[in-house]
Length: 510
Image 1 (cartoon, rainbow, N blue to C red):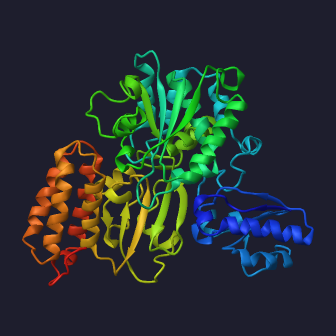
Image 2 (cartoon, rainbow, N blue to C red):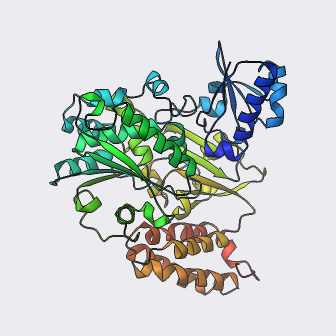
């Protein structure tokens, strides 16, 4: 009997380790031979720990399982039980997805290279090895892949710039400093399918002539750090990394570096400074990292999801990937659903699904059962969307036109009890705490922003005009997106929910 219990951090936080131990103990007590596999999560977090059992008809799911439920599951022969959910891939939340980047997450043993190969792993790298570097770049360009970390910059264009740049050495840097609230796609992929990221980085190296790569991983992800270190060691022993990629290619090797917990190091130039052992502050541009990045050399800086999407593009072709999406937003987007929501988790689908469909249909509305008041899209610097904007389709230009940004595609849902003035204050406070201090609009503006929101909360509605001017200054004058995007949540809260800013006799925000 093969039983799968996720080793993903979210599942572990909900008791997956206890369930795994209970399965082993119960099997031993009954004299039943069980192969226990700690897979990644399928992304249906409200069902975690989600236990899967391999049957002749495929994988059957049970969840959410607690350690105390395990004896009864054995009694039922992992069949007819109150926690039975049927075939995993028939669960509606999962069945409606288009899984390309996350196709193996939860399906395979994350640290089994044999399992990885059996489910299409390394097909992209094997397709890339005989190709000229320019052909690889052109394939990624034609796929329409854009930066999934938030900026939405065309990946192929970035690679082309680095490939044409002069330099004695070039680098591939994976930005895994996933700091946005309500986002977990990077972590989920690194813990559930680490070889996909490694394969994507090797292909990027082949494309631009880089021989060295680094994954800059946030310190708050100990499980991802452990899995990635182990996966790199396995890949190196298997010849995927080293002096000759898969025995025939040029050299490419990589290592894992752990950040010190600064949100601003998610910005690529701050990340590069931190990687070099310097203080994590923003660099002025130009020069661009593509010309003078890590150690002053031409550098590709891509997000985890961007790089992990590359293998499927090379394996299936640019047109297959580009066949999903809308407008200039091609391929799939892993939307992370969090907050006050009934069905939280990761939902991968082609660009184009509306925000309302995600919140009301896929996520099932709020966990409290109260009406949805606002949805923040794009992390702590993303705009708050009221229900009037729920017809906005997921697409970079479409969200920009609606006054928002997709960012890392995290959505956080709030019901009608949320106080949007307090949410605006949180955005300013967050910016003040996380600012690197390099530029005045961000460093000082955020502090003044907290003070101004507190004045409004105390009843000084005349300060609303001052808050608007301050946001304009921060947006236009900040050196990077931290200060420049903080006005998005503040002004969207003020614009769409003005009653929360003008209600009489407000208590001062704490």
